[in-house]
Picture 1 (cartoon, rainbow, N blue to C red):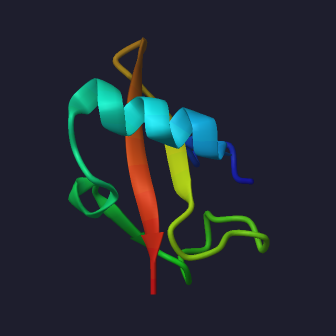
Picture 2: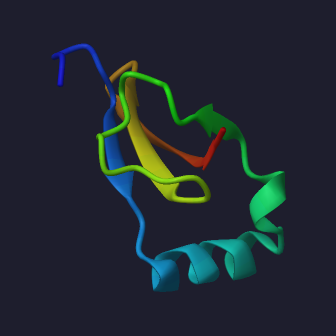
Length: 69
């Protein structure tokens, strides 16, 4: 992982279900990230959901991405 690369954390199935319920959305409505993206670990699989933590102007921002082909 590069120092400028935001932290990517794979969510468990329970965390994914909680996230989808909280935002009242389906998995297909999450923003996408390609499985070939270099930031993803080799163990990433299609339909995994990752939490992306970015620091913007000193404030931590959380984003979610679902892995697609």
